[in-house]
Image (cartoon, rainbow, N blue to C red; front, top):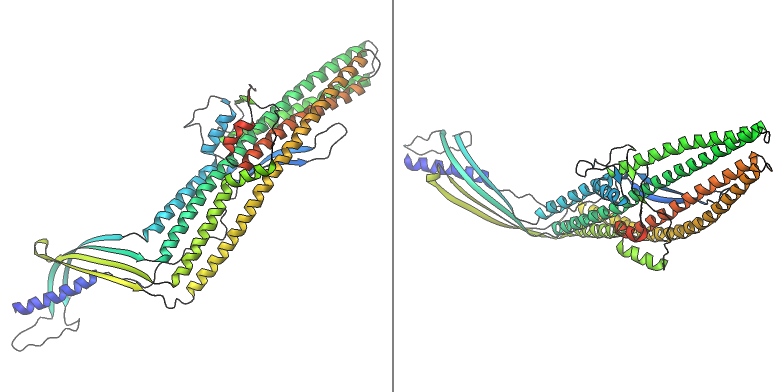
Length: 512
């Protein structure tokens, strides 16, 4: 029985070895199906707008500047934990905090990490895959149930074998030798990762515009409060002057009431402007990761300083060379082209090699090695139309992204030209506003002198005050519009944070 028992045992071992053999599934990897749009802005945006408004008889203001921020760019993670805050905020510090903690940058940084990880995943299809396995098996087999019926005269063959045990230590390797679909998928993932990095750089330009614009808005709001306070002081002085003249019998009570109404109007305006200032400071704090309150001061001010563009065409060429969103769009087109190549490569044969080595026996001391090496050539004959469908999808994605690339080029040129137009218009507006304010101030002084002489009543003084107030607001808005146009030009050219020092020259100021 010993020889026959050895035969049975070897039969069982052969079945066990087959259980550990690797099986290869038919077909290679499929082409990655990309989303139709390659734009990655997380639904948020930042833009500067200087819209024309109708002029009035007392105002020369023709532009209404504003910074429009939406989506993740309007929020931030708390920055004071890693960057302690002294309570005074310069533009440079605001930009540093915004670039590090604004959610627009944080979200795209994480998206870039994801696309980088996807490159690693796509590359794994081209690299060796090695697996190990160690097992210990205890088994009892019913040979009759398996259909094994051996009749030998003079010998009794048991229908049940075992229980017996064996162990197996196995290592397997598989390697893609030639698979164009996997290779093009990897290259497409690399291009997508580059696009994510460019999108992150573009987000930094948008954050620079958002934080810089919000900083300028706070300065403009503070200037309006200061101007309103000066107007309130003037209104109080006129009211006291008219009251004194009323006691002297020079002016009527109606004139006193008119000057007092002007004082009340200025007080109401002060309340509104202070409220707006507090909200603008809270908005700036939200962009830069500070505590959302108005309990801090700004240390920089930006008075009017001329800034001209020598050649608009040269600025457009510079922007087309530098803008990160254009580079991102180009990388997205490249990714779509590689994905199309991957889809077409599904029709090509692929070559792979796999190997398996195992040590098997009843125990480690009584074991023996066994191995197999398999080379396979897979030729796709008919995949049920999947390849044609993948190609059609990839062609649609490529066409869409090429259209988006062309649109991005046009958008960049439009932004540069619009920023240059706004810069010229705002500079002209500042000049007119200065002259208007100077004339209005001289008119107010002469009108007050005539009232003191008893020649006129307070009505003309109140009207002169309104003209001065409008002129002051015009000048504030004009300087704000000019500085905002500089920021817009920096964003339009690309690398906005590097452009700001040459466009905006700060002066130290301490604002309450």
